[in-house]
Length: 315
Image (cartoon, rainbow, N blue to C red):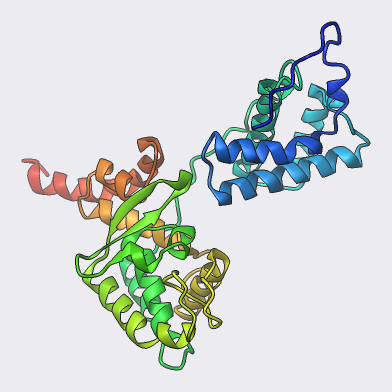
């Protein structure tokens, strides 16, 4: 990290605050990576949000940090609402800007952050979209012999549901991270935190078939570490994974909003419905806070009703 800038005596930050906000973006992203340990995907999201913010400032003729006052940020928030973005998306944009301004305070570029005076929009707790077990079975069986890479696609869908991993985590799986004999794999989650996830017999069989019969044809003479690869032998990215899930969801008649995260939600919900403990589910999902996992407790109602009927004397 470069040495922190200190205010010149008597300057009141005037000279420094004429900096263009965008001129500090690169160092801010380096700070998030080095000091906060944020993942590449998180850094990409922050960068995108802030570049949109800087573009909006430029469109208003605002070029220096000294011009970014509270009234300016209020107008910017209003522009986000005019775009009909969801409350969660607006909140994410605001967090990006708040973090950026706090960094500028930390580096003594500005004396205080006006962004901290803004409140995040109130968020309704939206329940995640969950597929029924029957629909999941139909999705996993959707890749057929007529598909060019049936074994890869079946293994991919099966691993997503069997482990509850994010698309980025499945994309990052390597051959070294697999232990099919013991039935587990190591995945790298948010904040570069590693965790062990179990592979059930169905997932193990699907992986074995793919690794033995189809992956060698895809990689050829190349020796990539990635488990899931494209037709060129390159690692299968999370966007490609998202497209494949969408493709097979349409084929099996699932709703249009099915994504890799839907399989993660379904994994968690089905485990809880089967009696899994919330703390265990937190570890399986790689959640830093139990509060994040608690969104899945809405499925407990059906199980608790059955327990009540069975155990209560007047059930």
